Image 1 (spheres, helix red, strand yellow):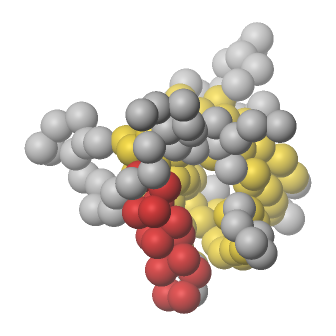
Image 2: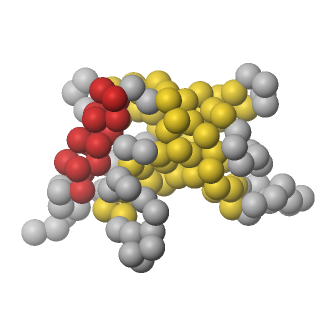
Amino acid sequence: MTTPHATPSHPASPDDRRRAPRLAEHLPLTLGDGPEGISVQTHTKNLSASGAYCTVNRFVRPMTKLKIKLDLPGAPAVHIYCEGVVVRVEPPHEQAGVSEYHIAIFFSDLAERDRLLIAGYVQRRSQTPPRGSS
């Protein structure tokens, strides 16, 4: 099984509000929340030390608090547990017939040690050339 290559995500404009570098990479992500009854296995579309962007199979309201498990590959693999808040949903409203929603999650409760692990991972992968390139 091959791992898709990582590509740095760069801000689209100087007005971009992101503070941390983002990495477009497909990493396992588990989202859960007791009161909302959410339990979703998904993958990141991109990741930074301040949050993640992913696709889920159901509508999740903005400002929903989630418990998160993020798996960073490595030897050994690192499992990061934190809490986050949904800050954006696309499409922005629940719609009949829509099977995928794209959500942006801000890591609201993340240990500094874990934030540094994610930041280091993003930095290392951003500097790694894609496989097969010379």
